[in-house]
Image (cartoon, rainbow, N blue to C red; front, side, top):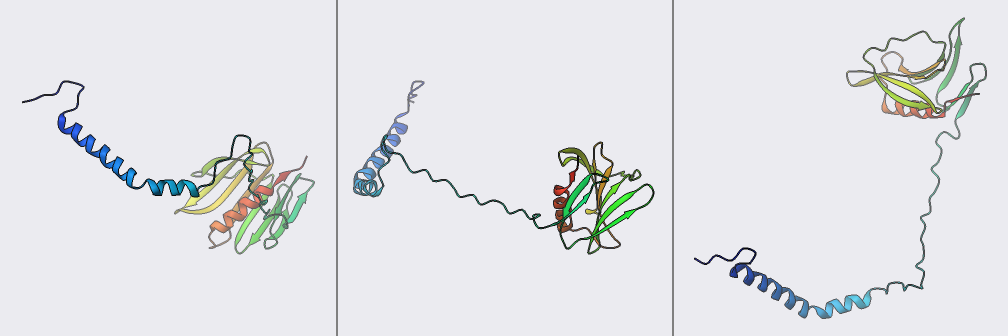
Amino acid sequence: MFLPKKGYFSPPVVIILALITLTVAVVIYFNRGLILKSKENQPAPPSANQQSPQVSPKLSPTPDETADWEVYRNDKYKFKFSYPEAWQLIETADEEVFGVHLEKEGISIHFIVNAPGIGLSGAKFESIKVDKVNSSKASIIVDNQVVSIYVFPENKNVGIILDSIGPTQITQDSIKDFDQILSTFKFLE
């Protein structure tokens, strides 16, 4: 039995490689006319002294969905926010707690100043920014349904809450509205 030396191909492997190479050469030879024609139809690349035109994409500004919203401003407690016209604004106050409430179709957003402590056991917390202020966002979820969302900016005396009234469930559209309203919230200096 013939064993090739280490590092050499056996004769059958050499024959197969030679046949593959020969086949490729024949295909290229008989198709050279097509290859030349396709090169003729291609535009010439720009020469070194020719500048290729620069195409800059036209970027249209993203429309601000909150631009035509109503603005609520409270100089006493030093905050403001914008909200869609479809939401009804209600102010409430007693001796200790002040609140601004937005309501629409059984969903409420509350801005509460001097709110008493709220128990949030079992809440899912995440860190967010509200007007560049580090804040905690707590989502209360029951049966895979958001029941309420609480936002507490650090060192500020305000809580922002999304919840539902009665049997109404919080929808993704309500959460989107809440997040958009929250994005407009600003502390006044």
